[in-house]
Length: 184
Length: 184
Length: 184
Image (tube, rainbow over all chains, first blue to last red):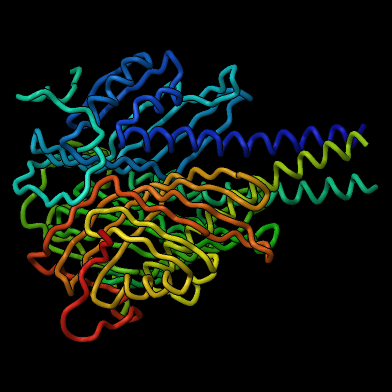
């Protein structure tokens, strides 16, 4: 009896560590797929009702639903740019067996050659995760809040010696590109 | 009997993994609070007798005690700058049930607009952690040693499109700013 | 009986978490030693038959065997440069008790003063690890594939205020430096 109780307590602690590792991996996959415009694979990290809010300098908007998020991923990483989003310092808290919160420190670096714009900065992500019926953790809510952002014109084109997105990213139609999304 | 011994061994291994995760989070909180001048929250990551040693290019000093550390945090992240400190590659070793060492690979990027100075580089942190009576791990000793550092004048002011510190950071009094701390 | 079975299952789950942490540390040590030209310590992270493939912009080659890898580390981080390789977002999968795969998101930043060249970019590492007879995980295969790379001439020498490699790195003989390794 005692042992059984003790074992259940241990199993619970192991489960917590496994859940934390699994949640980190959801976000790692998110960044990996985002920067390689991998729309097919990134779909699996969101709940169907996912909500994203972004409070930054050039961007400020709210987005609802997986389909809208996937559209943003496809438009957000196109062929005429290089993009880097790295999530550091994961502070994951289990709130229940199937819900969790996460706080991340983002470092992003983007060169957008169509707009000739360089955007660089840091931000916090405050996420909510849920473990769905299939046992997978997914992002249900993600709040992006800038710490700092610098956005300068690219005056001299850098010497890009390799670009995965040039080969695999979404090709923009000719002409102007839409302005940054700001719901003010 | 056998089971009880086996369970104790398992519990010890779980505890080690939990401690490693807890120690990482102490450092994550440190960086998060440092870059947002969150003096109130960062206080909890230090022991009262914390010692910091810094061996770099523009900085070289030793600092003793939590109060002095908190003062440095407040001065170190003020309103006229953007600052980014990311700790990577945590190599945490438990030395006993209540002591541990940590080795981190820091990447930092700072634009200080009062001095018009850009500092960028990498460093190792060699930390000592202790688990105090309240069950929380804290930093007792932190040795910062540069790998490389570049410090150039900011010749053209960047286009800062967002700054958390401009709103929430310590406001420097008008006039000159103190030189970098170097105890040579 | 039941308890014993249950305990074995728990021990296996703990072992998996310990292995993931151990594998991350192998890679962390790799980056730490690479950027400080620590050839002696880095030797321990490779199997004797390690294979590295690199597909990038300025570099493209395959390398076989630990001795050749160590030679590359010594030449790759010499005294007239600053170099930063950070591995993020570890996605580690245990394939068996003694084999595992790892996917990492690299961010690298290099200033090479002999060639007067700045190289910056991101890449994925797709690694294979094996746990050898001494119980240590090592890198057996590492596939480096660029996401993006920018390689520009250094037109104005930066103000290097600290350099570990200047003191501890391999000193290049006078004269020209070999071109980047490309097996096309």
